[in-house]
Image (tube, rainbow, N blue to C red; front, side, top):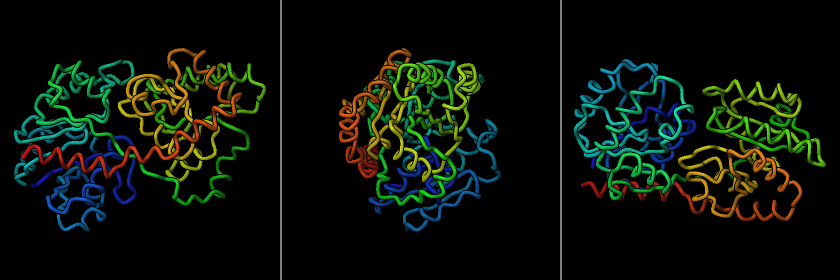
Length: 377
């Protein structure tokens, strides 16, 4: 088969960039190529500044760059939905796979999409204005047009069926993989000097946006400090600033927590692993997740987890995390207190989480994806 994969969200293939769809696309392709020398893969990129030397080493790979594009966020409708389908047609693909859930309007051949979450249908306040066309037209069109849909969790599959009324057999659940970072060598000295985190801390890593529920977390942390015997704890936030992030910093200021809540900005992979390995607990009180990869990565590193009891999260962590009601500040506060006051609970969570990567491998993800491709022959 000749399989085309849209790689527009891989920002830097040489460094396995970055998060979200880009992370998924990079590791899916990496492991597809590791186990499949039979099929031919055409990888479509939007910018020649993005190199794919790692992939081109494989004899069954061809990298194609769409001409004239520098910024994927400003691609005209004509280019996306008429010109790109014309290029795809030139390569006579047996299957076109878009890991970002979109099929161009004027592409009429077999297509597979991956749906990571449907948060935009859960709460429009979590997203910027101007999403109407994608929400009402483009995403539904792609879901109905796709021959098969990959959902990254059972919860996402149920959302697809309930929201779009599609048949269950059109959707295949294929979990994402978890890279095992335990063996990755981290140079601690430079990171120690950079962050200067001398006290125990709770850690959140992710985009600073309303869906991540950080205002409630900060409020709960403030109450934790008032009730805890240990007043030296800090709350560390790492990640880029997203949609409507301002209220997070307003809350920190209003509660006089400037010395207790530390914002680090975006952190590198090495810095992320260092922070996780040294945190007292990873706290992820998200209001909705299609999969929850940061939670599984942290668990696999032996980090005790406090996270939400909603969407796909319980499906993945089962009883290996301390679950909270994310809309209840008391629930978050009580979990912080509980994990500090109960050493055995914390140790149990550490042991339960270790090795979770064995249950979610990219090899398994790639194999199931190939099986799905073959089912469409």
